[in-house]
Amino acid sequence: DPPPGGYCEVIRPETQIITLGVRDLDVSRKFYVDGLGWKPKLDVPGEVIFIQIGWGILLSLFVVDQMEDEAGGVGHGEPPPPIAFGHL
Image 1: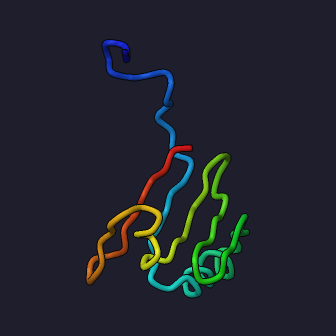
Image 2: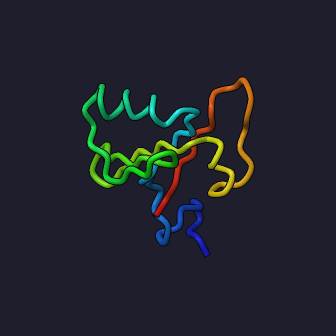
């Protein structure tokens, strides 16, 4: 049982992965990697780029059309692509 305040010591409230659903991975790569000079930790062309943006924090640039396989149903259409936070 969690303590009275509701906080459980087993799962700390931390974010290690920030996922941005992007419509065009090449455009995103040009901005984050070529433009800002951030170094990818993993780059799977046409699918995903992982960039370490801080100690223990990854930015994941994921092709939005392929996010449904990983995250379930995601929004499509005119609104901006979805953003997801993950905990390892």
